[in-house]
Length: 243
Image (tube, rainbow, N blue to C red; front, side, top):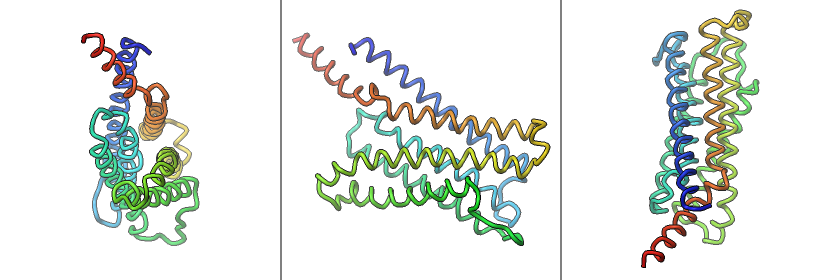
């Protein structure tokens, strides 16, 4: 890949990243709009407490986790120790939002016969959160607190990267199934008529899906992984040719 192709790929990558940001923010806005316009809004009262769940879960498990994954791709020119701390901070904030999202589910008043964690949405979400917590604990200990040897860090890095993607994919799956579950329970037979709320539900689910696809592509694309090395090599080549 020569200098011109590297530059073209860099622009393409930046364009996809910006598209992911637009899609991610738009999904947050649409979730907020649904909560306010169709579900009664936000609050701490018994009837409104649950509305924080979809918003906080979207912020934590979808948007922040997705951006944490992309951190080393976007700011690859920054010092590694700085990126490591930013990556950890974004992940921790995302985990806090996710835990609060789960907490409000169990804090809201129980209805008679109400069962939790029985659906695909609940199972995917629970698995994602368990892995998210374990990943956070091990990663902070190993990479921030230097509680393990350098050799162990080398062994943990591919596991850390894989689990990060697995948690994110599980989070996207939980988000999409959560939207679908809410649409079916709330709209019932009228869902098939595709009214305004039904279309809104479907749009939110599609935005989650596209955000996930773009993040996974950008974070796993082999050319992008080699981009910093290629740029450094080209800069060195240009320097030598000038001298």
